[in-house]
Image (cartoon, rainbow, N blue to C red):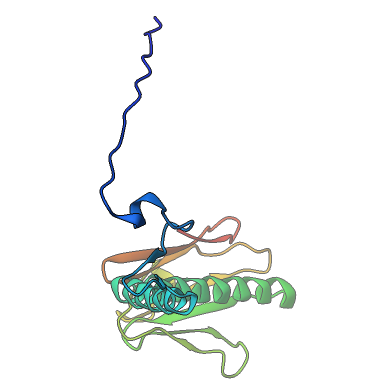
Length: 177
């Protein structure tokens, strides 16, 4: 259904204000009392944008420590993948270990100085087979020469956010969730 459109002409009366009769060409600039164009300079706008960007960066990192947790979970996954590759290349089992209390992990028999440590606020939990548990604070995941593993997972938690690094027992595939 089409509605008819009516055209109406309205007359606007202006009283003595020349600024309204001759508006400036730019919407953010107008003539002030001294007859000069006033408004924001490019430098002022850039300073406001830079300050706003810095504030957004500070607020984003203080609200969520996701990057710290994400980095730690990627390090764990990379270390597990490295252990699997070592087992396949050397044609002998490789053991990846983690100490929950001291917050560090390593590959047993791996390169010197390959031990990694978690950030202070991260809590870790390892789920593995009972044969790879050394104590209440330490466990491991074993990789075999054919690429398979004992399987398990590592859960990293920080500020109510959790990342889980899974290791499939049949294929030894490592994934981060």
